[in-house]
Image (cartoon, rainbow, N blue to C red; front, side, top):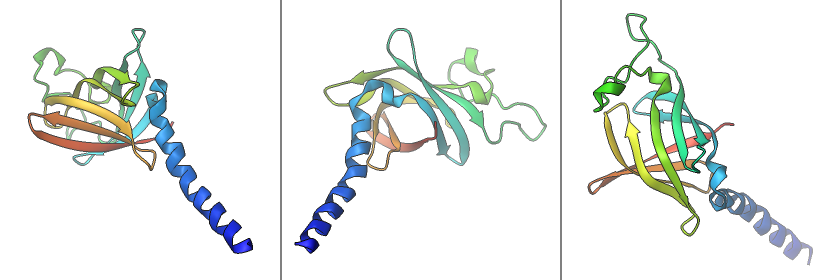
Length: 152
């Protein structure tokens, strides 16, 4: 009997983190926060916030290598929109107009911008079992997932 109780409690304890992390997808505002991101060797922090219209925006708020070799702030030079090429690297908007789908318990409906390569792709976001946010970009038939770690 004692052994059975230990087994049951062990199974419950093993399930709690998975169940708790999966619940992160159940509320739209759970996406709000600050995330650590490492993409193509670029260590950054991204802030996700809610807009007055109910959509979400993800904006870079810190870049490890903010300055270039000459000591100047790096700019978004790869941006296909020439009017945005003077935006400082720690102010780039990565996602704008992100919408939560309560039926799928995922965020999407817009594009993600990759400033290291200068293109936009359809995006879908969801939390995975370990609590990281999976940001999946799809362009044509190619997709890539980047995992963001929530720190605040």
